[in-house]
Amino acid sequence: MVPLMSPGAATNGYALRTRTSELLRIATAGSVDDGKSTLIGRLLHDSKAILEDQLEHVTQTSERRGDGYLNLALLTDGLRAEREQGITIDVAYRYFQSPRRKFIIADTPGHEQYTRNMVTGASTAELSIVLVDARKGVSEQTRRHAFIVSLLRIPHLVVCVNKMDLVGYDETVFYRILDEMTDWAARLQIPDITFIPISALHGDNVVGRSWAMPWYGGAPLLYHLEHVVIAPDRNLADVRFPVQWVIRPMSDAHHDYRGYAGQVAGGVLRPGSDVVVLPSGQQTQVASIDSFDGELDAAFPTMSVALRFADELDISRGDMIVEAEDQPECTRQLEAIVCWMSEQPLRARSRYTIKHTTRTARAVVEELEHRVDVNTLEHKPAEQLALNEIGRVRLRCSSPLMVDPYARNRTTGSFILIDEATNDTVAGGMVLSTR
Image (spheres, rainbow, N blue to C red):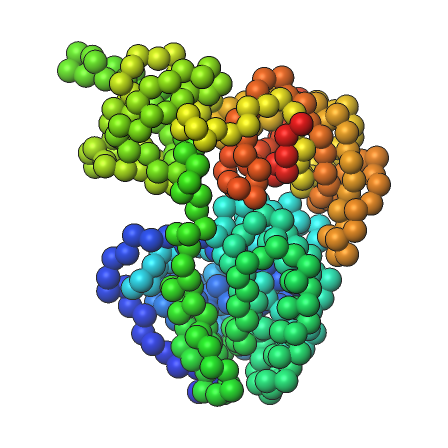
């Protein structure tokens, strides 16, 4: 067995000494054997986020497989088929925290045949890590993953050029990949891109700085993840509160309580705010905002709260609370990009159930406008969308949905399509416009 850390990697001993409340959701992507699972395992190992029995199991499995080193990829490749084939098939979620921040990492597959898994795992991410093998450079899969990051409007992208140890830590290799990836990203809509040269196997520039790459003046990966600013990425301008649950009186002691629970999808809500209930158009004021810990002075995006109003109104699950002067589009017609996730292809005139925030309706595909070639970004005519393909469609819904363009609000601009016969989720969609 080789040492867990090479002389080229510094260990900072990230013990969990403090508590932090800020959460960063991360999605990883990369081609086969680029080292996604190994990188996540290294982050967990070097930040001291692995239990002793987990580490012992990985050590024993690595020895039994004859790997010759501590195979940290086994921490995330949990399925037997994944371990046997050495690939990632399903999305694996791992949680850890450092002294500054909590993290949820989605380890998503790199294979083109598992594009739907990547889209699912990255749909809620605020930052994406795309790995590039330093020996192979930018591949079609790398470009495809960057396109999906752009499509999902993930605001922060970190390109980790991995396996730098196998190219002698050569800075010219790193900068050649940086230039090529920068040229491709210029065609996409990604506001923040960072490049870091790493060796996930040996830990170089993962948690600590690498002694083997003195030419790299940037921060190691974990430092960047701890300090990337994510609060401005959330829409704090447009109040959006989809009602998930109506809280009715459950006892005589609370006979006069009626609240409306959900998760804030946009804007800032405060007691006294003038709001409108959609789609009915009823107007009222927020009387109070309740949480598990008591009443709040304000509620921000991603907070789960219960609202009480100054008036008794007819409000149900699926309604949306918004500001009167800043309302989403209330429409039955949608133009959207969809990622198809079913083996049964999408065709025009097909009917599905559409679920948007907490509201459900029926939808018909009026037109399949085109398919997107994710490797070239070309729009190609298509009569159907097959599994893992991405295309633009026009939908007509049975009842109005309160939507924003996905570019404006990732929550109120997204939806899923469900097969009415099997109840399977067959597509994830992003609203482009309403018609």
